[in-house]
Length: 133
Image (cartoon, helix red, strand yellow):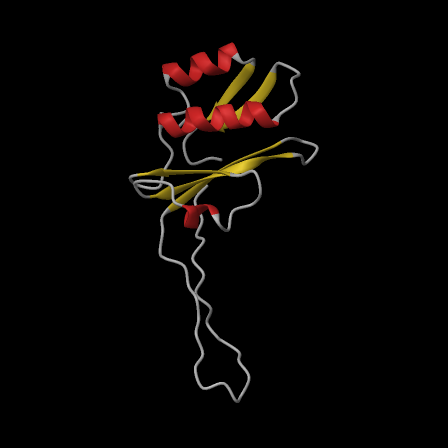
């Protein structure tokens, strides 16, 4: 799921006597978020994927606690990041297996490496057609 974390306030309020008013905005960034939730409403902390070359502290500042942050050239998920997310997912779910994971059929989700990881960790995978999640 893609979304924007751009903060551009349309109005700024300040006391009348203040001569200089500053506003802070965030940079225009491409980003993706990977989320997981179960039928009881419990969630795994999300993974935010930003467009960039390296993860910086500023990217980690405004994400929810325990969230993962990754970067890719286009701000989208890739095989390496998806495998990182699967490890994050396994860490945050109960040890009971098997577990059902439903995702779209993006190439990174159905790669041989991802399929092997899921098999080794008791994850049953259901793939939806692209753009249907």
